Amino acid sequence: GNPLTTTHYAFIAQILNFWQAICVTSLIISYLSRPIESWKEVVLYLLAWAEWPAMIMYAVPLLIRRLTVRNSIGAEVDYAVISQVSLEAKESLLRYYIRLVQLLTFTHRAAESGESWAIDQGEAGEATKAWKQVEAHAAWKRGLRRFDSLPNFHRQGIWHLFESWDINNDGTVMVDEIAKNLQVLTASGSGCCSIFKNPRLMAESLVRLVDHDGTRQLSWDKCRAAVALAISNRPPQELREDIHTFFEIIDEDGDGRITVFE
Image (cartoon, helix red, strand yellow):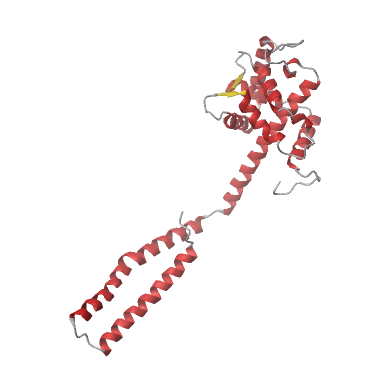
């Protein structure tokens, strides 16, 4: 980009105009006070005058165009729109991290209550209470129904969440990709959120919940079902706990206050 501002261009134009006026005045006074006597002086005199059309035909129009464009852009700037777009971007980012917190707390509560999909089942998926594909299919269908009942901005937010996870843009999200995104929460905060110690287990549990086809990965349908189950129809107390957990994550120094830098 060009580092020169409108003020710089205006100053350059003033300098050039002043220099042009001095040059023309000097040429006229020089000719009147001492006539040209040799061809060498004639050539130099004509060259001195040659910069005048160069200024008129190139330099000045160029500066005027740039000043006009810059002033037009400056006049059309709508700071209210800029502020609104900036606010919406920040709100979108906050909603993204709140959804991550809700996914983690949802899985943590399920594990505490002994739900088989949230229990670590090992590499082979073996456990006393194995989560079966029939149960995953039922959870998947239930999640799709909840997704369809969500407001449009929630559905769009879940789609943006899936987009951010699908780094390969192949329409599927592996457990490792989910874990990496959840790792952001484990690396943040004051360290008081012990439920985020193993994001990979959390990611495996979320996939297991809706893995009706046994692929151990999330498609868009499975992702929206899982997220809808995590964020919809939650009791008010759980929502308050999620917000409190989110606050703890942002509050890096644990002083009970959040600064702009945090």
